Image 1 (spheres, helix red, strand yellow):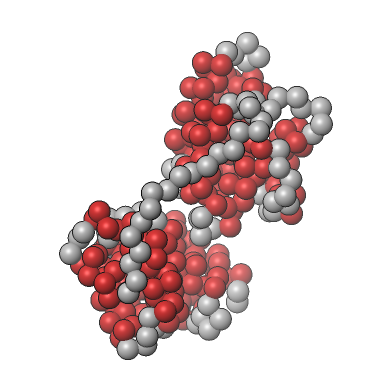
Image 2: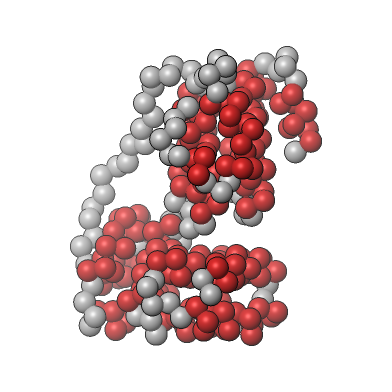
Length: 279
């Protein structure tokens, strides 16, 4: 970070270097793992925006990371996505001043959004649109699971575009196989927040799954990435469920936490904080 900060303070930096900084920071912003790291990278990006403005091309570099942040299960990550968007487009509709992360970035935000700041985005009236291809709609949960079982990876996006709605509409009889469905959804080689929401919704509709999910987090069958997905699913579950047994989850985690991989422990600490806020 020291090298980047030095470059940002150099008033003679040209646009070629500015573009390189945006390229590097956007990659890091898209893959931050902790809230502390995310806050620091967001701060570096805000500094870059304030010092040199941002071009249409540079905005495109950040779109993937911003979208990922806005869909993140953790509020702190979502807030940084909204804060960055507000500062890029000088848009005040998100009411970022009411967000917890606003205090961390307050001085930079005021400078960027203040009337004295003349630096702005290139071609202000440009509309940035993410064009998605037409997808075949998967209409039934059983068919969606068959696609995952058969590892038809070209159809995975079709499945995860609709998986949450399919679970909502599924009959109780269909969800009798929820334990089997959970495994296929979890191990599918497709990264999407819809996967997290789908697992969370399965737990809500079949609360007997809660014990299985907790056992899998501390078991040996799934890899670290799968377990992190399960932890995020539990975070969404406790934030959205009206009948969550917070004390049971807390007890189960407390009993087993010492035996886990250090990466899993880090994410479990986030989950524990969420639980303690509700007890």
